[in-house]
Amino acid sequence: MAHLYFTRHGESVWNIENKICGTTDIELTEKGRMQAALLGKKVAQEIHDIDEILYSPLKRAAETAKIISDITGISLREEKRLSEQNFGKYESTARDGAEFKVSKTFFADSYCGGETMLRLAQRIYNLLDDLKADSKTYLLVAHNGIARSVNSYFFDMSNGEYAAFGIKNCEIKKYFFPE
Image (cartoon, rainbow, N blue to C red; front, side, top):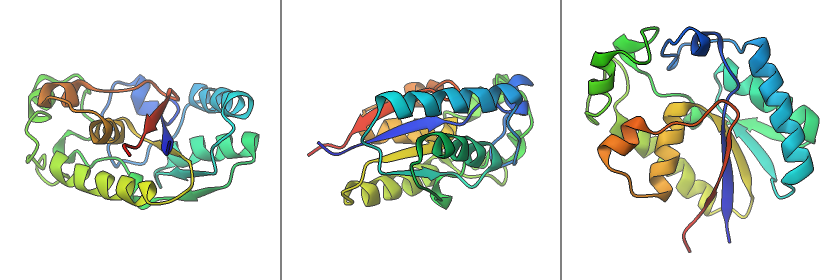
């Protein structure tokens, strides 16, 4: 059965500062690099069906992907559609801010210059449709906002479940394409 893997980048500087990163290009922390190396070792030891790594062009995901690739020997390439959602006026603000939490449930809200959840889903669903038509198995290295859209492609979610969904840094998930 056709499938893919998804992981979120390692810990970034703004993750520990509780700030929304979005498309702001933030570096990994040393812990984030160690998380990526541990994930690379896990993939090398336990997951033997990944043909290629696709990664977001943002530094935190690109570096995570490169660390995994260096350890596993799996080829990688940048995929622009995996870039994190632009959260407009909320970039660099508190991730748990009350206003952002509410705004995140309005799927047509562009956050005053950002990207709507609907546009994000369109871009990620198009990518996943392309990957489904391919015969390769991919590891996608991206962001928490992208994780929401990927998960919603495979599973029905309410708006509240979608807005609350997230995965930990360097957590890996396996998704199966429907036949």
